[in-house]
Length: 176
Image (cartoon, rainbow, N blue to C red; front, side):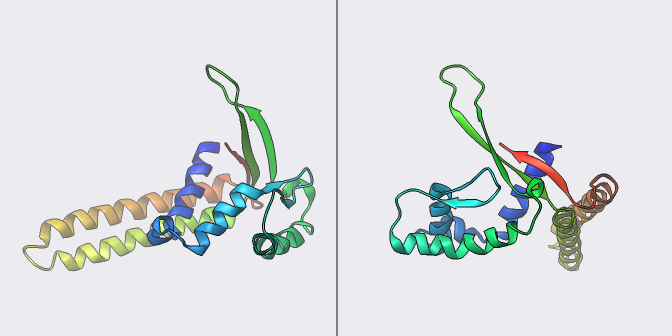
């Protein structure tokens, strides 16, 4: 279950992020993400902490992002806040420390992903229908239609599974 939720979250983040953001150098969003990865951690109370040596502008940038998040997290019960658990990696050689981030994934986020899969499937089926209007586009239309129907059925099953197996407050998961 943990791997399924991690896969769903990762896939949804990748699908909503434009390809140019991941590739472009000098992109402010990517620079902010890199800065946050290097200097932000979670303390024992489940609040974000900015640490390390930063310039004044970098610290102000991170504070503008994480101060509102900490304000909202202070309103949430402690057991619902994110946690970081340090463990040791398994395998030969030295045991390298590994951090896992734990927290709740709300049910609505999982449902939104399922609806996204259903909508992409419907869109693919419609594009396939229009592509099959010509003789040349008939094979491509059939393939796109089959992909669209498959995605819609998969998304519908995922939505049904989420509605029947995930509690209303979400699922507590750890991503390693």
